Image (cartoon, rainbow, N blue to C red; front, side, top):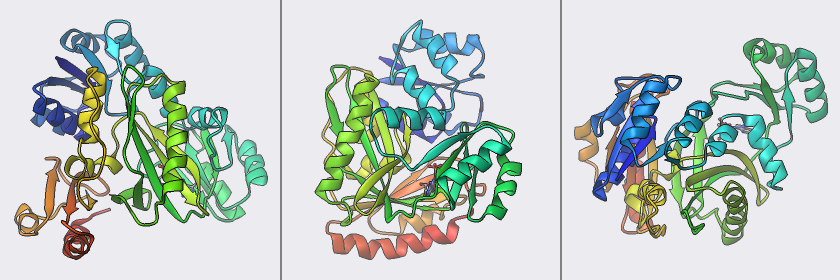
Length: 367
Ligand code: AMP
């Protein structure tokens, strides 16, 4: 079988690597001819808006999926008229608009930080009066890794935030004094069976994910059970097929959802090395209508993102217990160009290995 993937970045690359292990094939579509997915799988270079490349993808693939949520949902719908698409294009349309996303969570009774839609300067002032400060103003569309966001701490920041972002539809959100952040990744198959990865503990710096680990001591069973209930609501409501991620803030033991990603997720990259079945393989299995694999963690592990720059291969290879995932991308500030998974036979060994690995990764990081 061949899976057509909208998007040819590192997520498409890792999906392709998982598919090829199963003896299946992938074809990627991306406007950027340098897309790193193209190093490992056939890449069609074309714009999301053009019928030609989309039709080629429909012709070459038995099923279509996506790895990038800013693909216009019109492209997913064009494909859905011709070939099976999973996850549903509706999930893509919702996830690319922060307001629709929040409205879905509200509808499904999934707690979110207080939010208001903002379309004018006066609207921003009214929303600030209702929600209070600190708060964060976000573009409804095309924001990622902390881009398209402006934090307001005092009333003096409000005009600057409007000036920076006011040209597009916006969402105002209360700033959450969270204790920590977690993400839930679940995969649903065509028959409605669901597998869930352990809740993942995430550390961001300036809006960019730096570290993720499953099985963190701060994540207890009650939190995991609560997250499972919430993600199941979204999966069922959308009659979802494939991998879905919800990112949460944890405040006093309670979950507040930040956003959803209708795809495999950076916080799940540990699963290539640390889980019985990776998120990529389970997504491939779901879209190909194969039974899903186990999600249990097979050894203590932590994923470290390489941002802007990556340690030399020689330096990484010299470290024990480091699984290297270089995406073959050029480094530029803030860009995710690889990750490593540090593994240990025991928690103590993992912690020991993490010291050197973090030092090396931090020294190469450029934001
Ligand atoms: P986002 O692009 O919405 O996923 O935001 C990226 C990161 O910025 C989050 O993972 C948080 O670390 C931080 N952040 C975003 N929104 C808020 C908020 N309302 N309160 C506190 N931190 C936030």
